[in-house]
Length: 78
Image 1 (cartoon, rainbow, N blue to C red):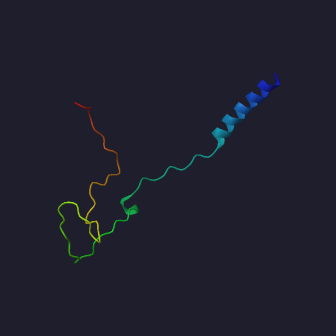
Image 2: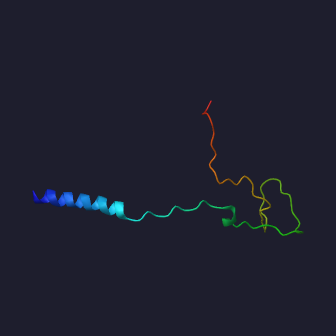
Image 3: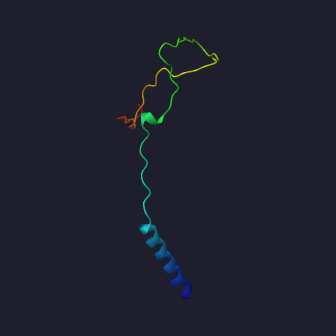
């Protein structure tokens, strides 16, 4: 009978400690300023590349379609 009392005390203390612990803070969603992209400076000559090639330097000219909200689509597959 003693083991059942100890088990009940253990279960009750587990739930009390789980309810009393502090909640972790929710992280903020990533903002566009959090990312660091190498960008070209004004006046730098730009090359146009067709196909797959290796270049000594690379840069990001533009980053598009950055979304902070999930894409919601109505309907399903057809």
